Length: 255
Length: 101
Image (cartoon, rainbow over all chains, first blue to last red; front, side):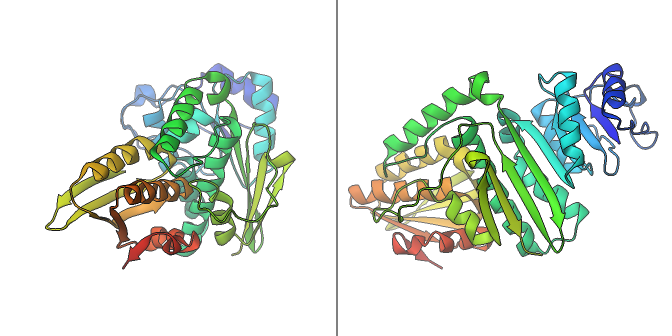
C-alpha cells in the first residue's frame, strides 16, 4: 500500500496508478485536527501525532526535518521514500525497488543526516522483529558507520581526518560544511535495503559517490584519526562485502 | 554531544553526555581547546553518560590525546559502558590511550 505525508493527493493517486500499488485507506481514528487528517495533506510542523499504517510504502514530501524525526520514530511503514525533487517516473522506479525489500529507505544525504537515519531504521526494525539488545546495538552501529561512510566519503566526497591534530578537525569541518551547503553533493541519495534471509538479516547501504576499493595494505603502524569505520563494521557483522564499485556495502547479521 | 568541566585539585574532570559522532566536530574542537588551556596537567574524560560513539568520535579522542601530549598533559578516559565500551575495545584504544574503569 502507498501512503504519503506532505504529498498532494492528486499526485499520490497518479503514483498509485503508475506503480500499481493501492493507496492506503484514510486514517479515521485518533488525531484531533480533522482538517489536517485527510490522507495526503501536508503535516503541520508541530508535534502532531501522525497515524501511519502497517507495512505501507511511505512517501515523505513537504515535511520539515523536525517533523520527519517524529514521523520516522512512530512509523510502522515498510519503506520510507523522501520525495525531494524526484519526478513521477523516478518515484515509480524507487517504489518498485522498495517492493523488493522487507524494509527500504531512500533519502538525500542532507535529510538522512538530519534525521539520524541509522537510529530510526534500527528502531523500525526492532518494532517489526524481535531483536535482542546486543543485536540491536550491533545493527545500529554497523548501519551508522555504513551510512556515515556513504554520506561523508561517498556522496559528499570528504576525506577522513588524517593527521592527529586540531588542523585535521578544522579541515574536516570545513569540507563537510562546504559539501553539505552544495546541493550537487547534499542532494545525492542514500539507499538502505533490508532483506530477511532466514535466519539472519542482509542490509545494503548504497551511495551515489565515486566508489571505493578497500585498501589491501596492512594497517599503518602510526595511529591515524580516520579509517576505522570498516574495522568497526567487521567487528559487529557476520560478514560484509563491497559491491557496485564500492558504492554498496552488503552486511550480513546473524540471528 | 554535551560536556561539562569540573575543576578538581589536580585534575580537570570532563563529563561527556549524549552521542559523539562525526557531526560533533565543532563541539569536540571547542572541548580540546578548553582542555589545552586548562591549568591541570591531568585531564580525565568521564564517558559514563556517553551513549554512543562512532569511528570519527574515536579519531577525535585520539586527536585530543595527541594535542594534550604535545603540551605534556595527560589524557585519561574512564567509565565507558555499553556500546561505547565495546567500540573502545574493538578499536584497541587502550594500546594508545590510558583507559580506566
